[in-house]
Length: 278
Length: 270
Ligand SMILES: Nc1ncnc2c1ncn2[C@@H]1O[C@H](COP(=O)(O)OP(=O)(O)O)[C@@H](O)[C@H]1O
Ligand SMILES: [Mg+2]
Image 1 (spheres, rainbow over the protein chains, first blue to last red):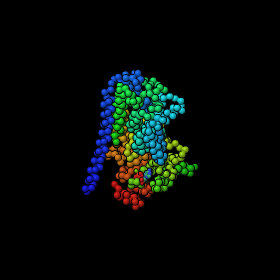
Image 2 (cartoon, helix red, strand yellow):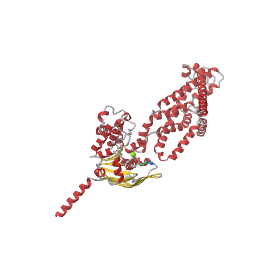
Image 3 (tube, protein in one colour):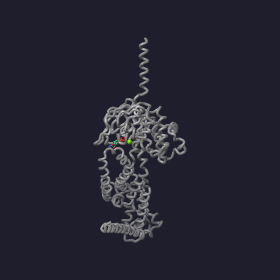
Image 4 (cartoon, protein in one colour):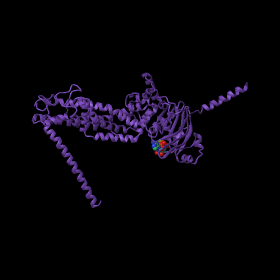
């Protein structure tokens, strides 16, 4: 090795190390800040009670409204997105497999949708809401979040379906299956473990997003009892309560941040562990 | 009138000699093209009933492609253009009015590698039966046992029929795939180098199976293993670069080859 190449190698290795260190440092800082402020305010009361005296001014109570609201919202949106994504992903990989050009176009389009900022979905949901004459509600939030995570779920499922060997498809057709039978009886079962990852990924994105629910789901002190009632969500619980001048309320925001971070962390770790071992 | 009796006798003899070699598959001027290349060139041949017909030839000569034409798995590959006609039991399989799934159920398929369906051992065999409309649980159970016995797998798996088929060994999976194909009661078995991924014992089981099955099924076996071809073949179709170079009864092909390419292939093969 010449001197120059040795030097080059050292320089770039140093550079990579430096930036990695910066990233890790920032990440640790973020988690540390949230934990330092949030963990002391975590209590049974925080997770089990609705806020008392208004979420913005009341010093008593917890964030059960946001925890329950977020779960209702993310679970419903994930179910809705799944119901839409499954046939689309199967259709792409069974029927459209002959039209590779079209498929490339569709995948590109979905990837663009994946990249669209969630506030745009929020604005879309809001416009739709106004047009239909509904008010902010859990249902409207569900539809908006579902619209946001559907492209993610389709593409994640699509990537799983793409890895199914052509031999399995041949075996299925050779037994006399139709395309629909091949899709729902063979491909679906073969891809099921991979789909779990896709579902967790979409759920994680749905539960953590603030902008899409800002204009659509509203905010309330209570746990919603139906899809037509407005609902609180964890991201908005952070956003609204952090801006309050009252310290107890701010602490509730940090507690919400800790809980949300934990949920997302658990989701992405389980998604990673579920990845099929190849 | 003795003359009519004579003609009757004659025609009887004729019928018999034909039925010994009834063609079940007739391929006429079959051509397959993909983008720039001509994969199968003017293939015309007949494949007789209840015989093992071996497709022999070096890798890449088009054996798999020919086999896939027979049950129209070529439909899955948009880049392939298929021209010509293939008749099975007198029916043109490219006739757009025909239901392709019933045509495909006339043929069991064994691939180079086994692809068990993502379900239990039991369901793997029941699957094809259900597609055929068999709903009676008792009949299905009987068939599952019958066909697992047929491929000498029953004793190995009878205590774990409900476990995933994908957990079986490769050799067991391949035998399961054969049983799965037999369960839909095909007339023809298409096998594409079925023992190439198997250990010697499993491939011996498959070979023995084929010899037994010959009395009830027409078997088309693709292989590039000359010894396997010699052990199993009744008829041989020798292919080279997408063409049929020579075909005929096994003894004739192996003992008295005509073309230089086949002579060379038989000399270097093993
Ligand atoms: N789907 C396809 N598209 C384009 N070319 C193909 C396709 N399938 C096979 N071929 C080509 O056709 C030729 C014959 O292949 P194949 O039938 O698999 O041969 P064999 O089974 O005798 O080894 C090979 O040159 C292969 O590259
Ligand atoms: Mg081949």
